[in-house]
Length: 87
Image (cartoon, rainbow, N blue to C red; front, side, top):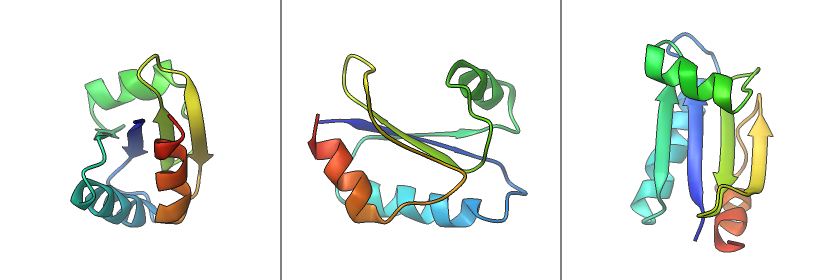
């Protein structure tokens, strides 16, 4: 099963929807890591993953291969679940 990585910033207008997505995914027992790019740790992770737009949602398998990505928008939960289950 894949893992979801969500990148956001507190003053990002679309990021509250990404946080809601995070909550809904966790309710379905999906592994989610979230990173606030306004922090040092979050910015370091965003740099590593070349995050240039917020919010960014990435789905990876256990070997860190990309299963899906959405940059600058928030996908429907079904799209993310499909990517997660493709792992």
